[in-house]
Length: 179
Image (cartoon, rainbow, N blue to C red; front, side, top):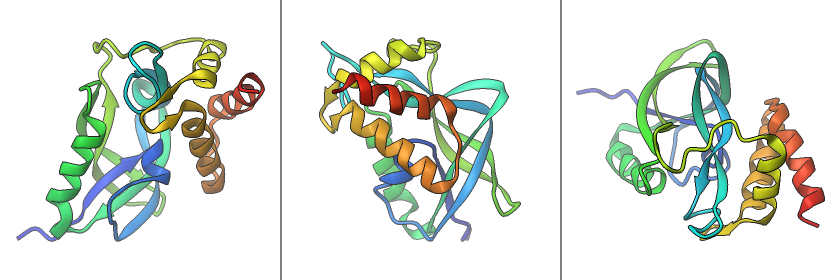
């Protein structure tokens, strides 16, 4: 019987609100993907009439995304995957993949990772930062204001020592626009 944990990679709200139990939380890097506001949110941080933006992993071979890896005990694997699929696959704009990530302590593990489907109608890659800021400053969805999502993610990245220049710029710009 396999006693290895299930690893989950978090790069956005999973970092500050995983919603599942874990036995280990480690800084991690996912090669080949960028954290960007490239998905329109019509449920959690916006509506169909006024979509917000949420972070997604967009495939970019020459970059990497820094985030957190969570080890889920084998006995809660099934329930955790069910929870994550209900949360992350609400509109099928994310694809569930198992990708190799590098843990800060030198280990390489395979982790369940949710990446954007660039062919999905909610995909909006390469929006100018100013346009992103204008959308985020005004959108509100079922889980609250889009600004809250941005600010929480920026704060947690800062606390973890993870530099994300675009996200930091957006947080400062949205504070001005949301006044």
